[in-house]
Length: 285
Image 1 (cartoon, rainbow, N blue to C red):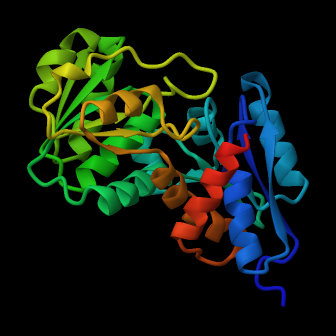
Image 2: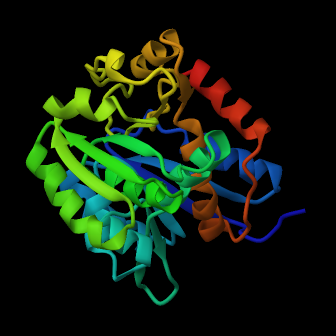
């Protein structure tokens, strides 16, 4: 039996895109629900992004997921945006409506919040160190705030960029935002309950983070949004030191669920079976 979403096609757009697990993830749900549809990977350069998105809309795509480096461009291109995308200043989901308009959403916030709630629990009265100041870091701040984080240290190699991010988001969140540069790592880490890497450092093909985890409290948890490789150098080092670790698959799965519903009309479930399928795909990559 074919369910709602028959014949629909969506995409995932990035540069590079070969590392993306989104086609496997959405393919798992399509098979599970017996939906006649597809999500295809599309490698798109920065300079071609707007032209390709408009072409995909005209070609009848339901929409696209957007990954590095296009999240800010996706937000700027949209005709209208939901609140989380506006707050984040970035979008990882573009929906093509029947009237021709493009809607931007940001499901990274929901994805990280879902992953953290599942693996860590509440962040009430907790202190977080967040690495990065780009679009993903913006979404991460909103997620951490939604779980009750008391203080978020935003560290970036360019301290002025972290300061701009903190100034933009502080009016929108209850968490106290403390921006700084890499030189502030040791002092920030000493009080951290959670470390979140919201950069692409450590992603397959990218250099790993250079970080002295000895500055962290023994009880601190380390989360890396990178999922390919599943165990980044950061997580390896953290695990060797006895820290609890959270890999990027949880965020990936939870952020994909609302995208799938937008593309194919059915809300999917994040399950151990899905995680096992994604790990299998990573092992064969």
